[in-house]
Image (cartoon, rainbow, N blue to C red):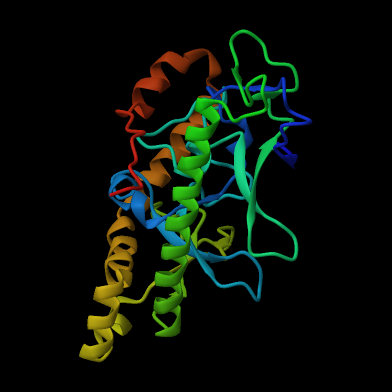
Length: 273
């Protein structure tokens, strides 16, 4: 689904409204989602972690892996529901996003005007963006506070990732679309997954003591091991892909498939901790 973000304005959006997503079609094609260190305790029980480059010359970014197939997020059901015990903060802030202001180091609160969670004229069931006096409503002010905290933690996360990259312990992750299937690697029809990176534990352990101590103090070492520990969720991801395929092939049996996907939801995240 194409996203169309525009800056939130008390002039343009005085009577606009928004609602939290109940369906996640806007994320249905995302192979990865950007995540931050404040989410690690939640992510470790549900999603594999990896590092990616946004572009060839961009620094590494910490992400949650949602598929090994381009254009498919196995955590989004064909009917748009989220399938999993934790929804990344990146999605829970939708339809809003803090986006960089061109030629500055500042960010602006923006809204996706085309995703079905925003309307220029608020309905009764929707929350207003602004009061009649042009002030942020309590709900939007709370969302902005959440997103500012998310952005602050993202900067902390980026600094830790940069420390690990500087020590050359982030390496390409050799994965295949048939990950977990018997004899997949030897199958000439199996395509490798490119772009994902992981921590090389052997290199990490060989770092000098003083370097490891510095990584420990900054939190980068904890991040490195969180990524390593999360790799066990890759088998779970492969299973989700199989179930997702089954769901699509047997749409009439959705109720039975739902029980296989079902997990307890845990959407609570405190960035003040």
